[in-house]
Amino acid sequence: MLLARCTAVTFVAVHGEYSTPGTLRVGDVYSIQAPVTAQEVELRKERALGPMAEKAGPLRRHAGRP
Image (cartoon, rainbow, N blue to C red; front, side, top):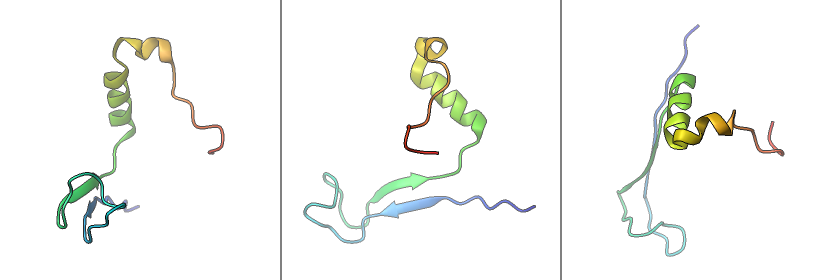
C-alpha cells in the first residue's frame, strides 16, 4: 500500500479588504499544513495541557461530528 504524504501551502493571491487577515500582502504565506502522526498529536496535546493533561483525560469530539 502506498500512502501519499502531502503538504499544503496557502498563500495570498489577491488582497481583499475583508477576506485577507491582518497585514498580509499578496505573495505572503497564510498557512502550512502537513500530515501529523498520532504519536505527534499526543505529544503536542500533552505539551499544550501541561500539568493538566492527567486531569483532562482524552479529548472528546464535538457532539455534532462523527
